[in-house]
Length: 130
Image (tube, rainbow, N blue to C red; front, side):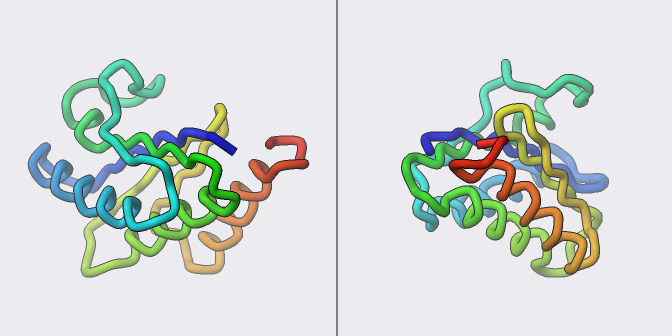
């Protein structure tokens, strides 16, 4: 696969320190997966329409999937599980891959599962998207 995901985290009313802490927790979870690397998002990769500045950069991660066949599904599943933890305020994670975007923002479990399946299926080898 060799794909690189861009993740952008947001939490309602989070200051940069809080967002940095959350990003660190998610990064640690993702590093436990069969992925090549998880690193901070460089400042020049802020998406169009996003608020510019340090908060967006602090809340960003690059995930290099390497050659793991199920890497994308594992990462998206881990992000979904991370969003469900604790008594979290309003959180959102935006996942970008090859111009395709998946935003997970407190949908119902069934809706979230359907969104994840659709996103992952579009990037499987042998499909139109992958």
